[in-house]
Image (cartoon, rainbow, N blue to C red; front, top):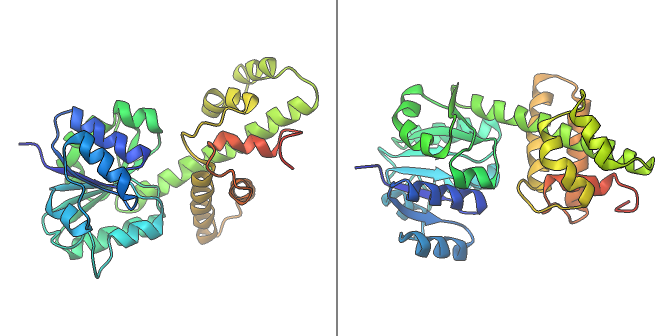
Amino acid sequence: MPEKIAFVGVGRMGANMARRLHECGFPVTAVYDVHAPSAHALAQELGCLAPKSLADVTAAADVIITVVTDDAAQLAVFAETGDSLLVGAKGRTFINCATLSPKTQVETARRARAAGADALEGCMASSIPQARAGTLYLMCGGERAVYDRVLPILEKLSHTPRYIGAAGQAAQVKALVNMVMNINTAGLAEGLGLGQALGLDLDMLREVFAQTGANSQVLKTDGEDMQNRAHDCYFSGAHAAKDSGIAWAMGVEAGLALPLSAATKLQFERMVALGIGQLDKSGVAELTFKGRRA
């Protein structure tokens, strides 16, 4: 029988991953979220439990997939005292899919081992539609044997799961992916914003970008949205601020000066400070186009 699976953190990413595995025939037995109504609604949809405690989530599953917001939330659900996923966790496997600092992924793995459980990083470099379709790009870190054991689950979530290395290394790679993506996003916003200020036709400008060294994946996903102020959220500015901070801190620890990373971090933090961090990361263009925001 397929392993029983539970989810902790059922926002738009976690909920769609749960739906995907449910449709693929895996028994999703429990869902949990700090926003209880979200968990209850998804539990009703999938016909599973919505436990009130983290310990009950662990008791209901063999594999627990976590998709929480940040380092603090991750360490809270893996608390070493009180209600925690670690209660009764012996023999369980945790797949942790949030974008976290490498140190937190390593600490999560340590706490899981101490409880007799296994932990694997399943860092995601995709957005909501890919979560629903099972086409996430997953970068995995931890023990290779654990990765191999849960590969049948990962392959239903990702068309190209990739084993990166030891605990913390997948988180490092994910931080670098997001660092470069966020720099590209902020740079594109400045290029289009300056183009508008110069009176250039932005449709033409995007076409030229696409045929030259200015081309990028971000141009495909965000360029038109920046131009048209269509900032429906797939990856929020607030998440971009958090992830840029993770990468910047890694640079500081490595003794490197990363001026582009630092400037990008400040731009996305400014989105949050202005109260527009809930917009898609394309909303950083609101800071660069004339006549939008100062």
